[in-house]
Image (cartoon, rainbow, N blue to C red; front, side):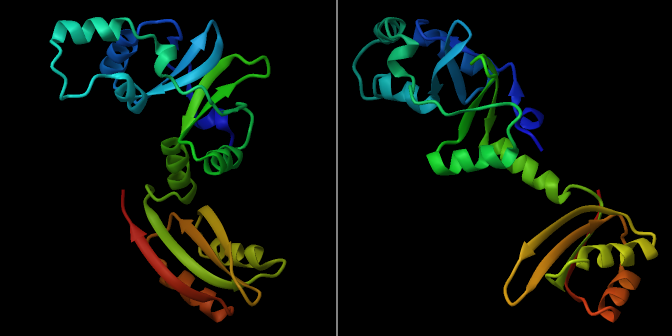
Length: 215
């Protein structure tokens, strides 16, 4: 899965020299938590609600609403934005994006083409949604966790058992364990899995857990 499949394409942006009141209104109208800051078509920063709060007068201020608005109108987006922005290409793997976020302790990456042009943003929420979809947790069917020997051919053998019961495997994830064994998590469209479980056990596989779900 690639970044371009999960990113928000053509995101709202704000010019670095715009007054901060302009981006505050944009974020309010569009319910945005962050906005890339640009000069032309190049990203130069990122502005979040937290950044705005840092340059806004505190609630304890004695200034009038008119004075507050005047001060904010004189503050530029570039005065409040975070200048260190981590970028990634649209053709990068989703795993690369997750690793970049983790290593740099950020929740958003800007997505840029080779020429530096902004084409999207990808956030932690996008990664989480992809993770949920990877496991097919929103789909109707059954989730079967199987403990199997970590050897060549094991997945093919398990797949054959499901096929013999006319059960389609829709999602599969393997967790490498210890002592040469792994847990294999399989989602299938089958709801009644008793015969599948029985065949798995008969072929030497330990069925650890079974969860059935309906849409």
